[in-house]
Figure 1: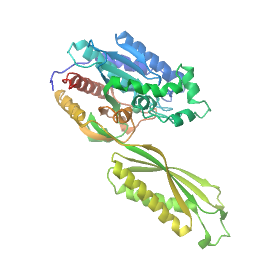
Figure 2: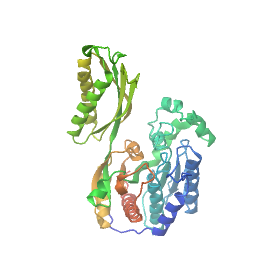
Figure 3: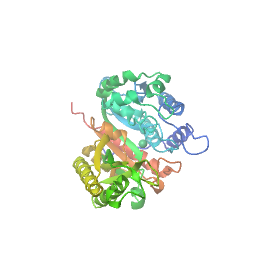
Figure 4: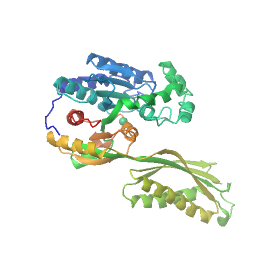
Length: 421
Ligand SMILES: [Zn+2]
């Protein structure tokens, strides 16, 4: 690769990051409320398009509400663009760094590369994807899924928020037609690959005292509901041997499966939600529903864990003469990121003299969706105390600037690679 070092405009990064951080602040000072298809999220997208126009980039949007800014030095505008970016929405009471960092860093990188005058062989695009987080409508990764053609239109049509506002109507308020979402896929041919800079959202970099990571894979996420079916009865008079206590079977399953997960590398699992019926102190619970979130970057391990969970649930049910059922209700396959590009990230860190490690991402990202259809790569910077999705989310200016430098250097290396076609 070309070992030319490229500088970035630090003031531009800091000012632009501060400007974005003014949009969608929680009125009570509890972080940010830039939920998907809210006024604040749409304002952030308008802000992004204005910023991009001021930089002289060509701005366009699609039917999913995604915003893009292109810079093409080529006469042939049909050449697919190398795309860098992230998302502008937040979770409720979220932070300014998750998503926002990636978008501002991408604008800074694009400006630096454009201003450097280095000849490159592909167009460059900055992307701000919509509804990455998903808590409002239960959709999540909506913008990047629309581009990659992975949207489940039945789910999207049914989606509504806690106030009963349908996704369809929230989109219409901002001039987007839900039924046009499948058309977004036609733009995929305009994307060559995708690189995303993001906060780590965990404590591993901070604990290792390292400033950067190249992400090797985005985890698969499988959510499974176990339903234990027994019989409700009196808590005092029912003989011990007759009690079909479904909550005890669920508790036993939690203990057994957690032990299995603790002893297995590359696998995490969380028993996060229990619904007990009738949920009364003096009644043997006749039905318990137990929801698990299971994650692994290894698809075989996910399948193995799914089978193990079902077996353990059945084994825990037998002594109580109850039955258990398991049902997957949310399933995102793991996504290995592009190995060659991960290597380019590491080589670029070397050019900049920055230490770097490799990490798996245990959170979902747009790069984990796009990485299934186009070459994709990710860079992490440390999160203070490993906290994210909370008002305390924080990464230092120094950490963000180092990440932005690495994003810029990596993007330049890929843009100046010889085109194969
Ligand atoms: Zn994010």
